[in-house]
Image (tube, rainbow, N blue to C red; front, top):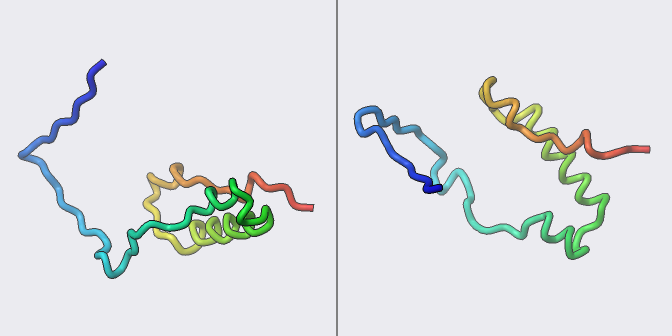
Length: 80
């Protein structure tokens, strides 16, 4: 099966995005990599994911039709 991509040259749209000064695209020391090699504790990774979820829920602008694409990690943790 051959995959291909094509573009309609008559109907292109250009959208603004963040500049290199507003959004840092440099490499990061990935949290999951650090967790896999025991360089970060389970409680630290849970804290990171909870903070990420809180950001996504309350601060990150998301279009209504894209809400279903967000993954929330908080529901995966069991707290005692």
